[in-house]
Amino acid sequence: MPSAPIVVHRPSPTGGRRVTAYGHILGLAHDDHDLVEFLRRAGLPDAETMIDDPGLVEWRGGRAHQWDAA
Image: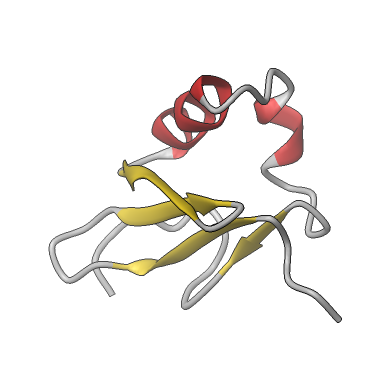
């Protein structure tokens, strides 16, 4: 089964999570607002609703919406 096109990677030791879309790094998000903004800038206008869709967004190495250091 292929993974979702958007990946929110594990929390970094200093906090925040790297976000990639279709293999391209979008940035280091520190909260849901950052994540939504990165996705909007990448041309995905419905980002608020898509971040909880497991077919589109894969949260790796921690719970969804968890932003603190691991």
